[in-house]
Length: 434
Ligand code: NDP
Ligand code: HSE
Image (cartoon, rainbow, N blue to C red; front, side):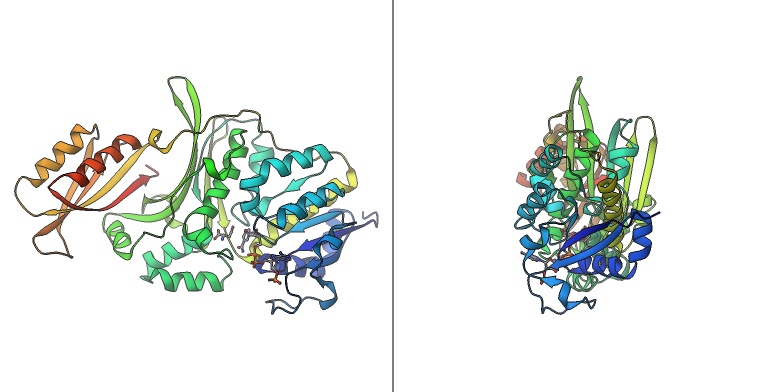
């Protein structure tokens, strides 16, 4: 039953996601009112340019460039502008004026999350951000609420839709990276600054948010080891396919326990995944996140990881919850960053690796390489040799390792690169999911 209270909703941004949110708020107003328990009145939409062309026609009289005035008197502020400023200032102003905030801004939360959550705690307001990680997939609320009584050991998966789309198109359709990126842009998957996706920043921001929730520790972007897909070539994808792998940009958040000292590792990098692994079947702009919890066991979350309409679903879910909370009163479920676990350097992780070397195709070369690898304390699992397609008289040697410590592996690769038998280190890729 609606109490016919009217909650004023201020929307900041009408881009890929914001325009869809506005459209749903306007066209599904009565259903949303039933669920929220109050009418949700879209008071206005702040944009940079009210005359900019939009995918969806929005009432001209709702558009404004004056975000500050729009926030005053709002009960719920939805921030979908992206970026750090002025989004940060607007969110803090909204909290200070008594509004609950809904945002999809992972860039902001991964860098200024502590400041924003502290402000919300002090003011008794809520900040909801389901859309910030893996777009349409409900993953924030499960980590924050449903798994609050469990102990999470590891989170592992694909959290960036656009890079998954690009790698998938290269792998399955042989498209160039540039062509695949062009289509991803048309679909609204990429950030306004696409280097955020391509260089792994977007995935690292999401990994920081997931790790903060999972390990009850403030994890910021600076704590995340980050590598993007900008150096992944069509040759690397072909080589991976021939060896039974595909390449995915992965986020890994895990607890490490070395001699009783607990730490966490949070990292993002392209890695080889067996084509039999469920993550290899995550195609297009989809995301998938595996959560390994002590009591619950293994959980898997899968769905659309990018896209305006899909992301709008997560935003509206948060808006309905914020409306209910606003009516019922009381504080929302806040953050619980009380464990303060230290972040381990990338050198401390253990995984498998595949190292591709270009060498002279001569007797004794393989034995020398095997010697260097074994002296480095890295155990070889497989070795394959094939003639180099680039240079005559050269061969490519692909070494698959057993699980090794990253520091030992990188020291070994440095010794291989400096040796007189290796012409070039073609690639070093981690092998995950085994
Ligand atoms: P867009 O770049 O498509 O849209 C941004 C909107 O914000 C535009 O309407 C723009 O106005 C407005 N805007 C930007 N800066 C200002 C400013 N200084 N003052 C007023 N308005 C401003 O972004 P998206 O919709 O793609 O993303 C929005 C947020 O959602 C981001 O934080 C993003 O990371 C996140 N997100 C996006 C997903 C996606 O698939 N796109 C998925 C999950 C999260 P104008 O239109 O006039 O230029
Ligand atoms: N640019 C982001 C991605 C949007 O590609 O995953 C969803 O957060």
